[in-house]
Length: 452
Ligand code: MG
Image (cartoon, rainbow, N blue to C red; front, side, top):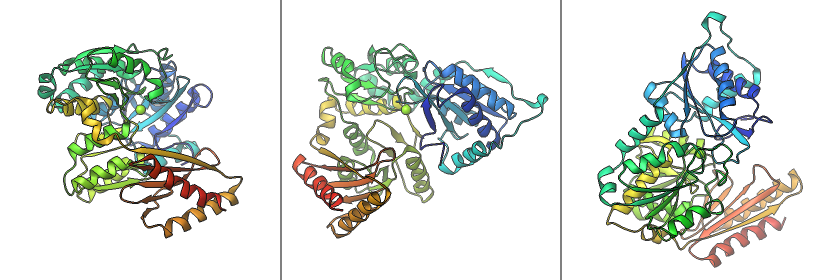
């Protein structure tokens, strides 16, 4: 795909992502979709309204009526799309910096468009093959209220509200000025939790922190948890489809550790868990212990969603899927990442027992990650390096997976080499129970790569 990445299209608003471009994306979607109605939602970004207006015009010109649902988390728009049985267009750049924006496309089942469906829209876009209806068939825009409230009610009904309320928990929440600012504080209060907030006013300039929920952006939340009696810190990205945690001491919880803890509760023998080829050893160990299969996809959320569907078609049970960035899916609920739902499922782990968050993730603490980059000069250099990696990989005493790059699984550790999509480097990742073991594997593959 030339225009759409694995999660739609993103760029700096009014530079790459102009109203004209978004208008064309919406014209293409409206032309490719077999629908007379679609929904548009957006996160809190300063350029969201401008771009949503452009998207509404594009859909209307293709004869599609538009439900404008306003600011809503992406999973809230997905819930609306499924409920109404109509496709949807989300104006969001997810975790990207404030000046960015983007478009994500959702099908009438509430699931992000598959790669195949995105390609149909992209073909229309590149060919400017737009369906322009006569003036008296153009779409009409309606503003729809209550979509956020319906979303909160739906997530509340889907989790173990009684157990969470009985545990009398305090949640410190950092919605990062994003769309979750308008839903998550209410959601956790109605779950029976006491709620403390930071960066929880919706603001498209993101004055308190960048939308990406990584440790470096979440020092305020860590401090809030450490200096209060909060049992858990929860952070979202800009469109609140991700949840990242701090334990009750204010310590950052690695996304991979949270995913492993949630998976340990979900997985039974014979189940499958889907993750990308950089899946953590933590998840490998959890799947092994449960007698479940870890199914790895190329990196990118669309690939994970496509795999969940194909495994489901084959009759496999996939109770959980996702990545270590806080983007987790519980396919029995919906094939969508959902920050509020994921956080509530984590609160269920705390309510069990009850158990402090630090103890919930303790079994998944002692893992070490090492990353190395090997630069290449040109295409020939790159190809020679990949050949060298392949030779080394085939001789190694490990399971080789070539889904996306070269991943070697040793049982207790893994190493992955794959070319960057954006820079002239081959990235080497390794993870093991000790930093020495991880470094040994990364250095071995780095040496093999550099020996060209
Ligand atoms: Mg997101």
